[in-house]
Image (cartoon, one colour):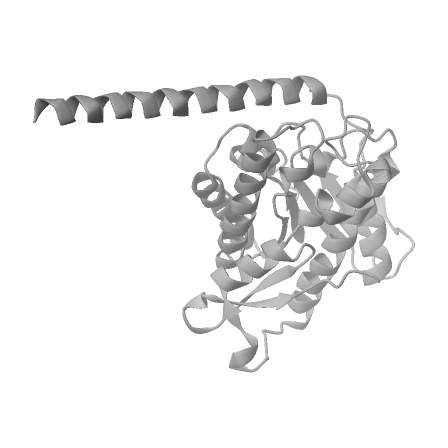
Length: 308
């Protein structure tokens, strides 16, 4: 009997060494990718202000929270930031002035969102737009912990009568400075986080929009125009693509609140929140909205169709 135990111990030690070596390799890959991408606290000129001030409707207040993708990292003009694009686009669609305040921070993680909300407690938004998750993946925050924190943020905003639209974590599997096998790990983790984010957001009463298209097929096909100079963050065109899938969700949320309408589809039109999350991860641009069905565990899904 002693001999098998020694063999088992040797096998365990060998397996642990292999696993440690693999994780050491991944950490080395991550360091190289971070150096290639670079880090900075620089941000574009502030997009905060009123858009469509000559329009007749009631002013809509929009709060933008999150990380560098919400900030618009890499662009040099205020009007090229996601916040400004949201302001202009939403004012046009809603035919009303839109006041935007961006509190997103470069490098922010989900754990930083509560602090961003508290920056100006006297300014009460009608809708909050959140884009976050990438830094949770790169800092090895588990999808479960990240989604739990996001759900808490959404519940707080909803309790304060603020609609919430969340752009889920983009697919990091096509980021150029990240090499294999780290790229495969990044893809798996980012997709797992996006799925859990969707469930947490919808169960808390918000709407989610899959942003897999940011670094997915469209970005793979058009790297030259969709990525910025660091090949990690989006270009101005890339940010515009992100905003194009957020605006419909923001509009739908605000219009539903204005009309005080609940989902009126037949029961078979609904899917479970978990199934909706799985669909959204596979189909970038998909919007998932909560439904007041039995137990609050159902959602309606609006899939975005790619232009032919």
